[in-house]
Length: 149
Image 1: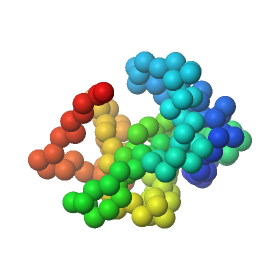
Image 2: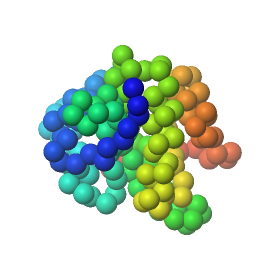
Image 3: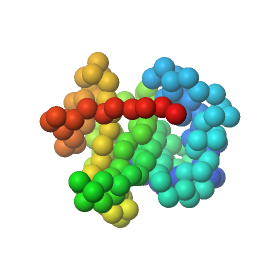
Image 4: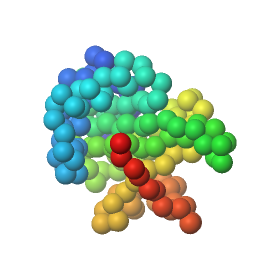
């Protein structure tokens, strides 16, 4: 299978939302369908603060990757954050994740992204290996800190 990426829009919501539900269940994230739809809809309708790409055939995607955009003076402009990256379980381990990340970079360059960040569980060695192969590295002296509102 080829890791084709398709920029998702509002017509993709009914294919995307069940995958987001599966990702949230896999990660232990508490969410319900109305909350997922409310979070996805603005981005799919063109909110400029993020994008979602469907992975694989548009009509029958095998996963998705969601990127949120920010701005960093230190890094020279727009930065991206991989918010969610999900592949159906039966697709994992075939090299598709590496291909997605390689194909994603030119797409993000078209959005003038200067840096791409992500979070990964310290217990998820498989994901860490994938991200290291794709060129991600821990920034010395930095730890992501979060405050929820």
